[in-house]
Image (tube, rainbow, N blue to C red; front, top):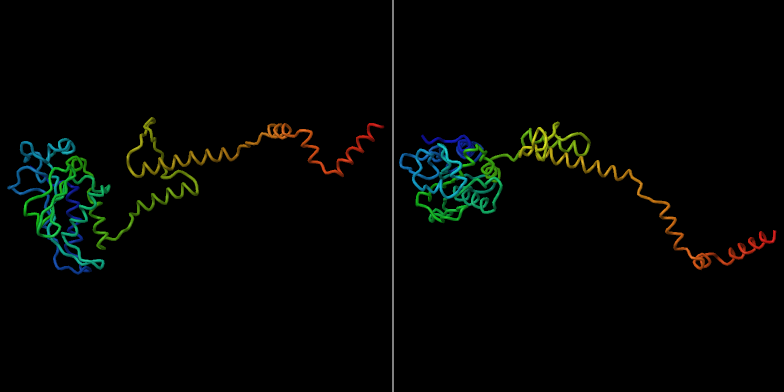
Length: 288
């Protein structure tokens, strides 16, 4: 039967943790657990709330994108978020403002929103709109006047990709989640800084960026930082080698200078008194 995947359960838990009960925030309406759904009820047949056991023939959530057809499993790939109102950070935040913000991130092609296929929402509580990454549809039914629907490409759900970053950014922007860096991330950045400006490798390990060795580089941030550090090391070594080379060719310089000194130029460069002294000295030596 259709399952709720861990990565969408994590998003659900994140939203409920920060939009349901917070004694330090003034609220007029909390987001309730029943308002955040993943698996469709028995009335759902087809669509992203259904897994492979409940999709239908030519289901749009499967056939319109290879990302969906390749990622079809028993997992649902959708999230519904109900109404809330929170006053935080000097502003009032609602399902409407939340939905508009998320759509804006999708339109801007934010990196943490690229797994979202569509958002069906109401910007004003009167009209229903749909942002569709594939450009197939522009509206939805009236139930979306009081809840917002997120569809995720099924391959991202199958891969277990973390879908919380977008929603963390929203909570951070409204002041409900502190914008802090994890201890691990701080250690990694400190390690890169130390390697770059003090010396040593960046993370205490090496990667093989072109895959030619026994350990090909992964696509993780750490691997990319390691690779960047290695390339910087190569560049520094090359610059050091160049700085220790003597590019001066003294013989070529002397030959070039002499070639440009004609007798006329030499004579013109000698002061008259010195020329007379040279002439007298030459006459003396010839007479001797």
